[in-house]
Image (tube, rainbow, N blue to C red):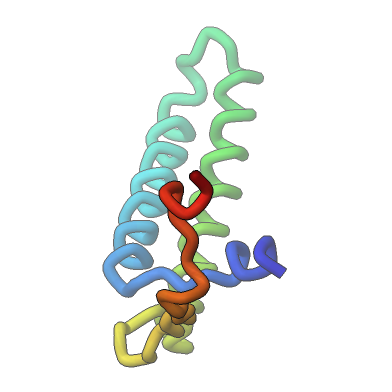
Length: 100
């Protein structure tokens, strides 16, 4: 159950916007690589990087935009669950002095 909670943890709005900016930069890098594709020494490497940047940047942008549009982010309005506090009676506590 703990693993599922980690996978579904909501992020805040600023994090989603930052992800969109970073993904935009990845798409820009892919564009620049495409422009300089003809002059590259190792065109297969450049082609692989272009594909990787387009796929990663596109997916990150799409997922972040979807979460922003559908408001699936932590806006701080939900009350987080408070951890349960246990009450211990003084009679139940044992100290090292009692053991002697």
